[in-house]
Length: 298
Length: 334
Image 1 (cartoon, chains in turn purple, green):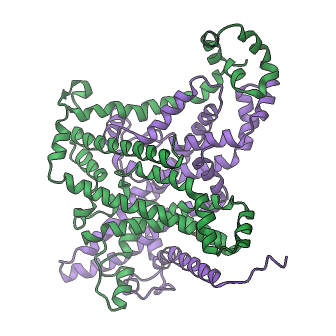
Image 2 (cartoon, each protein chain N blue to C red):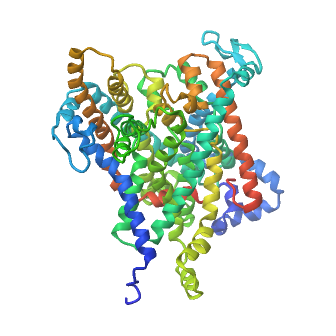
Image 3 (cartoon, chains in turn blue, red):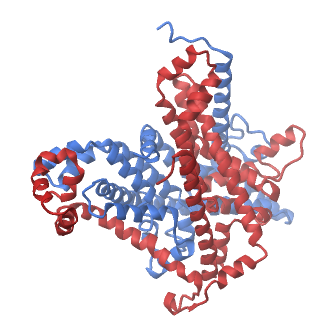
């Protein structure tokens, strides 16, 4: 007990100071977005919004609530994320389980075939043409099926099974006559909560944040995910801010619109990020485990 | 029920498998394997049920495009299909190598990528060492939770934040610079600054996440090592240098090899979102170029050739770096 209470050395003070500084560097930009979203953009633009909101108003939020496109995007993203992640997790866990069994005939070959795709691929254009040939462009499928399994996640999960689930446990069950299906559902799955949690998080965040796929594969505006809509909002507002050659009457009208557009930028960024932040604390405790199993070879 | 490989490979099933073993020994190994193949496959049919959807997926969505990559050697037109298109050999590659933007593209890509590999390699290690020196408690866990968080912000949101903060006239950074008596800096409009913006914003977003694996590895160090070092009179910096760093070395090498494997594969999403006509001179990289040539201008074959060139180089570099790492440190990917 006495030894536990170590003295604070200069080294400690320095370390904690740096740590505190890092905390500020990471948090402040996020905090700024939040306070800017409820402040008058005129104050934000001249640097008057630093610690607290100024000219408090919720116009940005009202506008976002009344923009159907954002909600369509939000709904689409929720659908792609839930459906996509469900497919991801089921396929990854089952395939990883099969690959973790030494008895699987052809195991090394299958594994090589999968790992190879991590290091080499056909590239953007052949993939795009494949989607086109399969008539998947502009359908919801193109947002769900092409990313159904990530080779990396599959190998991580397989390593988890090999390392964390004792073979003897299953062995005993199988000697008693249990099938692979039975041991998988009654022994392996209950022990796999950490890896399922981590995979759900990885895949889920991937779907929610994905932008490029939606941009290149979809043109039907009713199918666009939130990130694509968001990008449009962010860059269109920018364009208005950059155009300077205008008459005075246009200017005043534009100024008002621009004010709201500025706020909408902040608000829509928050709307797109909040769902992630909501699930983050629940899954956070599994991170270390999930990342460790994957990166250190078992 | 049991496959015969199991008998060979699993000592835990010896009692049950012993029966097979004895009988099998009379035959030669090869014959036994061959004769049992069908039965061995059949006895794991349930595993195949689990595996086959995923295999089919990889064949279609990973190997499909690899098969389609041959259009890099053809004059592909959508109407004629892959086989109907004329074979032109290396014509598209030649055109790419001869074009005036070839050296610019390579230079930009390498510059951004090497710069981010170095920063993205060092900072997480430093952060992990720092976190490891903090005493267990609230501050430590808060710092970890907070530094991981930016990783989960989407690229679109993140680039939106950057364009707002780095705005020439009213961005946060320029307000500070002007407030301190400086001149506004065109972070996103000055081509010479693009790589710095890209790399250091990436550090803000990825350092915490990258440190997790190191923090976890550091937590596994035997406390006795520190005690022994203390008795020998080692300072804390010496302990970090002689105990912590060597302990992280295998992880460091593995991650470094992996990042070298994407030397020419700068994440196109972020570059694409930060790009504008003013900084294009330094921000155009191979992947964004493939997008523009291929999907915007519909030069499918040409863009595929550029992309293929990129992936082949990446693959070769990965294999080389891995071989070197294997030679000098015994750490390798496979």
